[in-house]
Image (tube, rainbow, N blue to C red):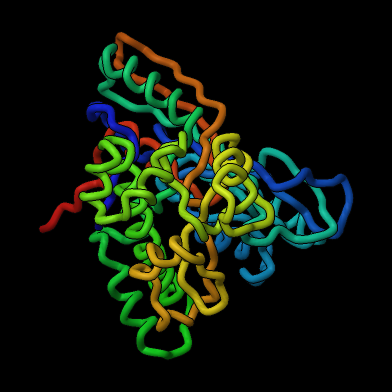
Length: 365
């Protein structure tokens, strides 16, 4: 799978491992919860447990059906996480009494008129401990991470999306092209992996285009890309790294209405001001495509046979926030804290810093 890094610094060495001791994430709800309502909202801290496993445990403790338990987003097993779960209020006593595992701690309780639904999430706060960080590497990480806060990063899907062998998307493609209705969560997840693969490939190509324009003279970039010289001249005048094309689908950031790029001045000003960002296609049956030049760039990564999912559009470029670093020179441990909007991967942020894949190597026996 191709991946083009946006920033031009040299690779930075550090040790990363996604474990409950070194990887912390906390959900930031889309809105504040009230003090009354027919739904109990649980703020839960868990470790060594996926969201699906958490729901299974709560269902067993309350005798609820899993479909009656609400959550906003999925959290990994190999982490210490804080997330919000909703259940009908009348099961409050059962959940408090029977939820006894040491892996789960109820931090706070709220109430709401409505249950939590998937996607009702503003973003996530991360705190990640990196090991084997030299003093020089710490300085480099701080410099480039600060620049990323200011200028943003590509919003790639992380390696977690594609399975242990990074090839689950191939199964998804086969299922999508079969024309059959999806059966169960596993098939949907596999087709989503194919959807994400196409998006990542498109994003990598757009980053490559932007990099070519940024690093070369206009005449040279036009030859490399085989674009008209006048087009490259217009694109090169854009101050931001990620170049916008006529017809790009822009969306108000971090959420809001979309519009197609017709006026470069308006779009680039909003993009540079973190008020809007271009989006990429998540292929499906009911999703708008880009227009004009942007559609031409999107077409190789479209698939009109993938209609089992509705589809969506995803921010191509996002802006991390709230960066904070704590360094222990003696142990060479660097704790890096930051915030990302929903759907973004912390590992993507770290990979852009380090310029190497964080995916654990699969040991074959």
